[in-house]
Length: 309
Length: 226
Image (cartoon, rainbow over all chains, first blue to last red; front, side):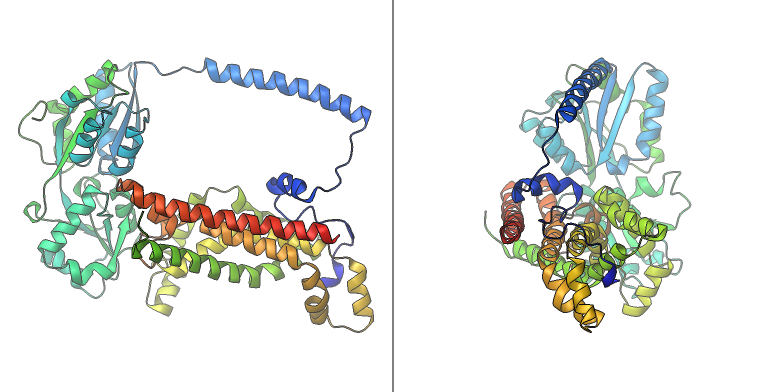
């Protein structure tokens, strides 16, 4: 193999040390001899640069003529425990508001908080707790009067392991067959915080901590369990009750009195304050239809309707 | 902007990951580069394309496939679990596999270019004088290509430091095991702990700059010698 190396470029600097996209940088670093274009090449370059300009104008025109942001679009940032529930909510909402386009993004509440605070173009924020929306209001990035509690989340202990004695509740995690336990990152995910408190309440936090793996958000945590990479996990009940996961693995409730309640708040952002469809969506979340969906996904419902105090 | 023990732990883990990955890339990448250079077959072209792919591939694609392959109920994940008693996902070993794949083109491409530039006449002369292939490699090929090999190693080291998507999908953010600096920074931002995030960012920025500067100096020296 050694003997067959091609003899080219002997004595010339190695202008191809780097991947192609770095050769520009490298050429300048090496100040290697760049071939001078002939007159014919110059003419060619000129005409191609003209057609490049035409092409750029065309692209710019296409981009500008794309439908811009109009009031009939609602951009929703939602905590990832809502990932499946939201599909159903949106279907229901679109039935009664056929002209409204909903654009939803799901992720960790902490991430959305930082993005919205820095001006991300979301109209609504459906957090997995109350404190992130309240912080947004404090920062002037959301409208105070719009804040309300739309649901109270619940935890479930979930596993793909068929032998785990789930009737023991969280104590089942002491089984040596359970090598990895997934929870959401308690440092920034509300569901992770609740899972940590439930483990503390059961007196298991210290002994189980070396076996914990932390999901970036609650749906990644569920994915760790569902893929079998974690032997068990403490996840949102709303995920394991979704049609997609309903018959996957086994689960038990984590008693809600073992952790602070997962009160989830929705708020209209500064970006969405003039968006009447976004306000309609908030109203819809408090309707009986929406509450029926939340109920089906295992959420407990806040008793009082209307804005929180 | 206190440099806490957490920060040092994450940085040390990151540097360890980069070192181990770079070492593996040197040991595996050099023979691979030589093999690819010496072959004109379609198979080699396909392999070369595969090796180059991580440059354009979203890291989440790599992360997703590894996550699926590493699951304990799959052959690879199961084999590793029986061998070590530990899962590949959420482990340092799993991150090393991810990093090696992720940084492969950043090592192999410069290696290939460097070996191609070594004059064939030098090697032919050595061979005619009775040197074995092994000796030609150690005394002619590698010394003449050392700068390109250095660039490849530095690039893959730097690229592994910058790894984020693959680790996010495979890691599980375990302190001291899989919470590398880029992930720790991301976690701090989500915790709204901006001063700590700044601490990570500044250190990563400084290390990256030093590495790229090293590379530029290596190449300048290389150019001056010609």
